[in-house]
Length: 596
Image (cartoon, rainbow, N blue to C red; front, side):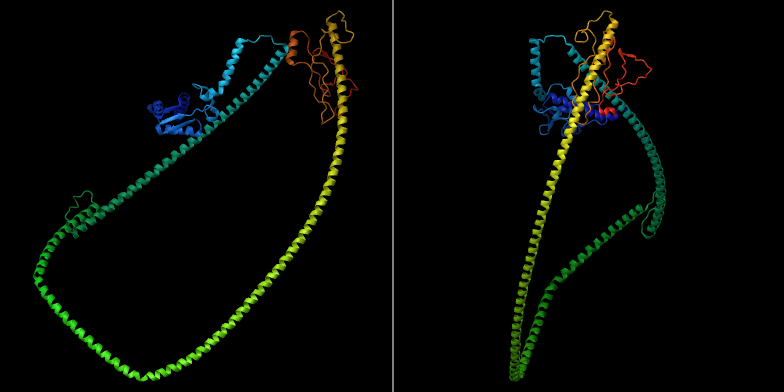
């Protein structure tokens, strides 16, 4: 079906909801009990149903990701749900808010967190029951404030509605893009499937061709093997004693022929071994008879051998003694012959010894003299090397002292240059500080002048605004008097102070506003002025009630295009919401920034 891909996700959702609700009711539950609760999922026989290992792996994954505050005790075979009274549910787990809102019963953390609020709510309800609040009518200001709050809430709701509409439009765009993307993916998937089917068909054709080629090659090989088997069978039948009929064999092969040949060879080998066994037994019997016959002859042969060995030993011993006697006699004769040369030998040895002794003494004396010379040379070389070493050290010491002196001189020069540079920098810094102070003094003077000019301009603007407002008041009073005179023919008694009567209409909020604070950027007053009076709802209410014909539009800001409308010379003033258009006055003071 079309919902088959969602089975695994549905099982995960069911397991998550079951674990969440169990954690709200139980603190510890056996793993077997939990598996029995989810057993109906497996009993349905759906493809992809979780087994026990997968369910336990899912629980471990939820604990590792922080979705559930749970511990698994494999030794006890149980799940332990951790409920810390001083840990918020939002901090301990990442369970969605929609799941937490449908809690079966509040957790320990919720009880601890909401205990004071419940107590405060109970006390507040008790106080309301004991001392009920006095009902009073809202004043006009409160009604206006409430109405303004409602207007603000309506505006906020309108903006939220616009945001929701924008989100809905964006979602529609995203859904359309997603549908287009899905269509493209489906088209690419169909193209890929078609290409894969074509490739599969081509591969199948190639595989069939390869199989046909292999079958043909196999048949050729079988034919060649049968021919070889026939030739081998004929050869074996001719060379060996194998007796078989080639025509009677349905599937003749070299393997069967080799098997027949091996069986024949095994048979021949057994027959040969049997014959060899018989021959060996016969030879063994003959050998035993030979040994039995030669045993008395061995003793006689041993006695003859001992006798022959004794005779041979005696002969060799006699020959060795005779040879030793002859050699001794020859040595005695040679000694008697050489004893006559002893005197000459002694004299010659003495002469050679004396000659060699004098030569040895001369060589020894020469060697001693050479040793002394070498000692002198060695001593002179050592002294010379020491002198050279001393000179080298002295030169190095002089060079080091020179370098030290040069370094000290360079350091002194550097210090002098640094001191000179520091003095120059100090002088430059002092000059810069003096110039900076002078510039700051000039800037302060200019700023003071600008502030004075700005204050004077602001004062002038305030006075001008006050004069314009007074003129506007007088104009409104005159208009009100004219309208009152038009409506009531009776004469209207005006007070001595010149103000309008109490029943006359006045422009709301016509009181003189506070003087605007001067800006630091320019000497001119604010560019825009908020008109007096209420909002459009009040004016609409007054217009519909008929109390007043129409309310005045707020006065335009000074210097704006609306403040000085251009009226044609031949065009008469027109009534506009009960107001008579007044021609712009000439020679009205304006700030310099508006006169440009």
